[in-house]
Length: 416
Image 1 (cartoon, rainbow, N blue to C red):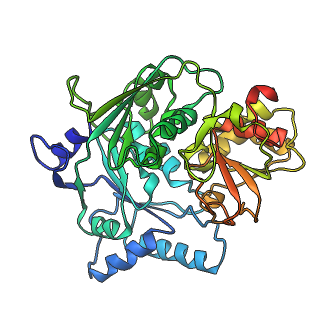
Image 2: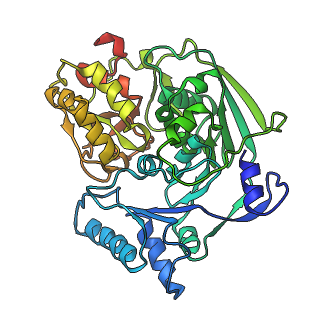
Image 3: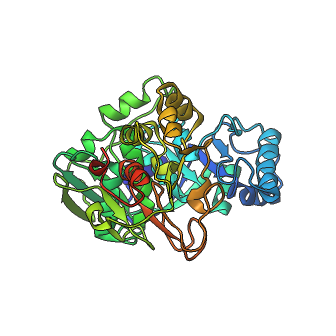
């Protein structure tokens, strides 16, 4: 699929892995950390306009609401650039969301698109059948100027997930299990095609989670070929035409791996790496100080519903801080209307406005020396969420919610 998208956009009949191509982009994305660098580079070009003010997206989501003066200056730079260059898709605090949840929600992502973002988790949009990948800020600056980006065509790995998903097992568990099997460099500069019966059963929220963490396996991108789930999600959301692109039935893959997930337990990634993955039963008894439910990986409405179903009528353990962060304003409103936020607040959780916040150790949930957190985020490297001697474990929302109640990492069935 990726080879076909890149060939079409490059005006070629065919490309093969290793080819270098220049292609026009449908979207170029930046946030309050990466876009300021791109903006400064862009201004060096001396241009009076961007290539297309409707194809640039700016989302202040990492250090916002502004955590300090430096963050405020970064956000102001985005705001002024958006005003000066009439950027259509600038999303201010109060209207924004975590970028990789926001863009699909707003109908900005279509099958067959080429999307770049100065953030590694731009690969999220492959869940909708787009070719989407992270770039550096200088590449973003060039794209804002000329509307193009260059790529080396990646080889493709096909991962086939067989069987039916057990209860409490989600897209997060599938991708953690996969990274645990192949390692954080197992798909280095590869496209990953997620396929099989278990993927077909996944909701769009679950697929977005899997594509989001393709980068944690080293992937250039991850994707699911468009199907009814995709088209149902796009209905009423995307108002521009698109053409879905599919891998040929006889496509040549670098490798095909099969996983039978019928008996899979919920998964937990131990520090200090997303590939240090074990079943939740092997994490039993690990005492926690903080739990975070949110991020571009698991802050969507399905994630909040799952967490609330585990927590309803219960209290967060007295020794634990629980932070719940809906990924966008729309998700926040929907969770409010469905009563999910009431469940969390009754459980004595702190509910936040959309922000990346604690995921990158930015603000609103920094860990002290020796503290341990369980998070639905995507990375758990040393110092990721605070002090270098703190620890971060990764899981899906069901395990996170149950563990916030128990005070230690547990299977959801232990608190239901």
